[in-house]
Image (tube, rainbow, N blue to C red):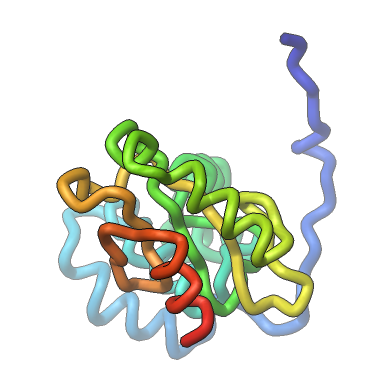
Length: 173
């Protein structure tokens, strides 16, 4: 497989007029988050969590602002954002459906559930519906192998899933 080289160093960062890290957020992070950690770098994950939940993504501009706030390299922030599946650079839908694809879930019918969700939502994993309502994800393990197959819908874990249960969940949303 050949590697595709991207011009990351020269790619312009799209910026919006207002900052992602507001003065109010900085004050909160300074008072509540930073004191919990030995150094500023250690506070990166809780700050990224806040941004992901608030904006449904972590834009490049936000990564630069976080790096400046924590006095770390923007590359360190990008490395962290791109490493963890929870963080996205593109906005996610208002409801994120994350289907576990561990071996236990695969054996228990995860593939059929994922295919059904693809058909019903009209999107592939890691895509968002055109109306911005749903994002479909696959995750490696949600740690509930004894109740497989499972999926996170928002912050709620749904266990022992069937196609009928998935349809009921979607209808309720």
